[in-house]
Length: 68
Image (cartoon, one colour):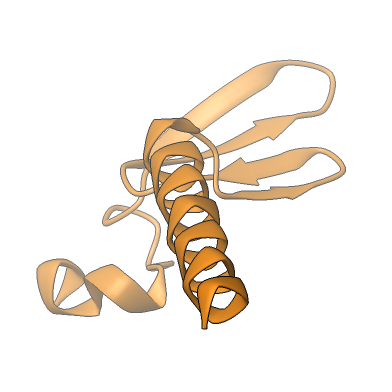
């Protein structure tokens, strides 16, 4: 029973750490020269260029209602 309780505590601590990391990290999708977060989509080719997420027609699934 004690082993089960320790496993549940470790699982909860792991989930809390992942929650804090995912909240703090500013860029959620990074793919080579393209980075996207909730507010901006950026490209880093010859020059660094950012657009607002709602202005270029691309929206993350979590904010589709905001982009409509």
